[in-house]
Length: 267
Image (cartoon, rainbow, N blue to C red):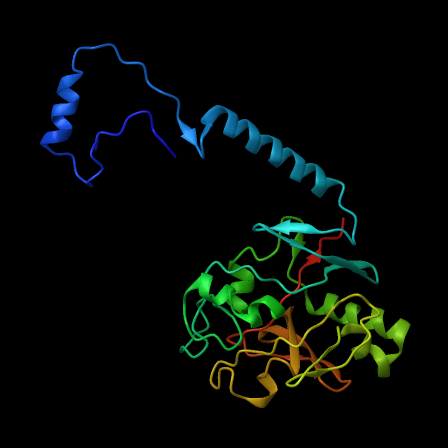
């Protein structure tokens, strides 16, 4: 932003004698303030542009149809109809902050992780391939404290996660349900077979454990995926898909980091 007047005329970080001399040189003369500019655009025009963009987003949200994209924190998420519910078709990747995967966490604090990343720099974490593929991992407090879903959407409950599984099993049969969820990845390090007939596009983002961090075999990205649901005795459960054909819902320690999908509110 460029203001009409900058008293630090020589831009040395302080207002000194040379700056005062410049002021005195024009003392007593007429002054006409210049326009406030934002990225070379006058402030009034810039605000008008923002209002137009906001109105367009509100219109898009009000006429939303499942299967189209929805925006949150600058990222457009794919969506998919699963039974009677509309779900994200990809993992949440919003990173207000990122915590080192090997830090000592506690129940009260909100944390987000990127699988395998041990730093705390958000931009660096976003450059990791695991973030690009799998999004972020969140503990329970992040799910309830942070706005990880856009307005009109929420973190799924256990009942909604159960309905999700049943909606796929009705079509695919219980033995084939996992394959219907999974988007196929097969390379030197990952054997994640699936047809993704449901469009849910589940990928093996792994899990961040609160004691063994990323080291336990069941937590490995590329082999297992865990998706958060709120509820149960601990406050948090997960839908687990493994590299075989197993699908299960089980209690989770709320300090663990799990992948997360958002679900549209029912009217």
